[in-house]
Length: 454
Image 1 (cartoon, rainbow, N blue to C red):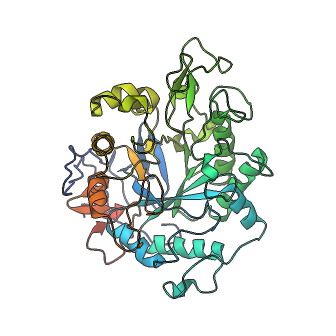
Image 2 (image 1 turned 90 degrees about the horizontal axis):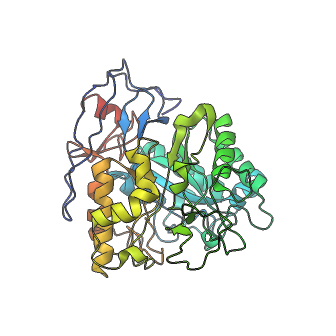
Image 3 (image 1 turned 90 degrees about the vertical axis):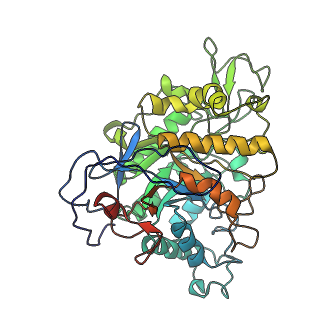
């Protein structure tokens, strides 16, 4: 981590298996994650960049981002959900001890603009359970939590989930709304990038959550080479370049959209059947990255900071056409994942990070089959991901935590566990010095230990 002494150990240039040891449901073989070259010492900071379809540290050592989402700062509460019941340090430590090495944190542009203007709130926090948060405003709570992430070897990805601080703000299809203009969207990103530009706990910025909308909608996100306001590719490039002008070391995540014109169609073609449109390919909100093939995101001199980030869900979230019949991993790969985003990995265009996936288990065999299939695809190919979500109050998916915010859903965690980076039975963090789970962790190792033979 920056501003601290790093491990001065030689990194071993050896390809090694991740040694996945999780219990059932069984996963497929682990991806190989190894070092590209011998380096004299561990990097002096934990910033990341890309190398083809891989993400690597500053020394070129390959890493695997395997995390989860914790929402609340995006919502009207303007702070992590669950702090009304559970202790912030306990939750953070448990995530790290259980192998989550990065946390995706949804926020809103409205919140960023409030913080930029010096406007904070006293959040709904149970100070009996969280005495350390007594008297802190919501920005101070966020900073306190970043310190906990540093303590336990966790990294952070910020995600502008919505324009407004609204529990349902993600339903709005685009990144501007009301008084939150596109320019203010960019300025919000610039402000938080400036504030944390030397803090390598925050290693990634997810530009906007789930842009969506169809050609019939009054507001929609499209993907082409124009500079139109509703072109999400252009918004990603603009926001990404403005962020990287301040901090050239953070990863820029660009999600997909919802629909994309079929060959011969344009964005002006009629949309006659939303489910099986003859003019448009449909996918999940944020999950359609077909446009990258013809219109890739261009970050200029900082292209190696670009990661594409689709979202994918199962039939309990929505009955997509591809869940009809006896689907399996092969059919999902061929019919959905490859044409929408997996081709980006296969063609070595850029890394992928599936920013949201997850759901309820044991209620629908098709849902369970989808979730295991996607997990196995990611494990087999070393695709980065952040599970949705930690929160039990996510209505259509539930969470890794049960409703009391203290106990874990062990069945769901056991499905996720094979997709968490492990080496020789230990979870691997993204901090070169601090073990995942903290200095005295018995379940995790640091990135420095991973590549020094630890």
